[in-house]
Image 1 (cartoon, rainbow, N blue to C red):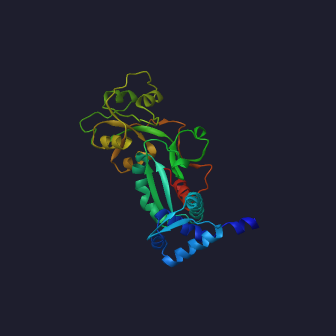
Image 2: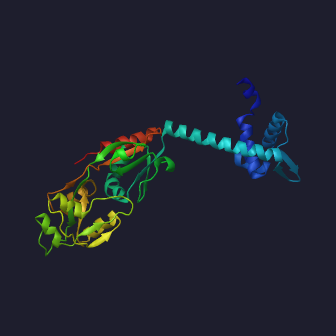
Image 3: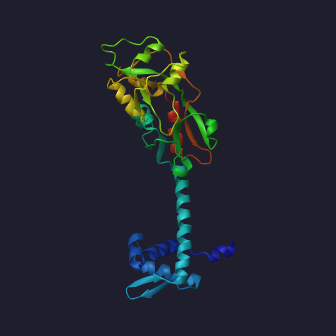
Length: 302
């Protein structure tokens, strides 16, 4: 290691060399690094003396990398990039900062947004970034620490998972839908109403057929009705009085308690496909990400 220590130049000289080579200018490097041009020139000369190699060709009012300098610059750029990324990762783990949470648009709109004031009050030092997607993202590939995902954790062995909400589904309608209509009492009564269907393009989701089967009337012809591929639009359509849709309890219970939506049946379809907070097994969560994870899991489940 002593030989390595003697061979390697200082990190400061490498930073100066990288900037000067990238910009093709000692003056530009001095401006970017907030140094004097004389200090940049001195650092480059010291580096060339250390390596016994001319790294730059000095021309009238400009400099450019020599052949040896270009090869060395490519290696230095890659090395500094790796060091910078690793240092950033370590600092993020140590000090926290912002946290990204990946979830569906529906979860963001109907679960997160109503709780944002509470989150800001409980975790005022954390900047939360919510990234919505219509499919399940690769958290490691995207550099995302936390996500909300529905399903069986056995299908995601690369993630750790903690249950957030059970999947419980029942019919809901807008407050004005029943004006002039008979309120459905039995499961079979819903077959005579305007049913709104969620058609998820990338995620599997329970359907009206599943709900009817769980209520004991499977095999009946289910009216097609309006089909929408976004659950936020499904809920907005229901609120507008255009029909009846399936309501996922953890998403619609707030709207039901406010009287915006009406629960129409005591029967609920329950599955083993619960919703979870997940995070990569191979990643070390920052202090801030741990706080957000624990905050999510501590929210009351009415």
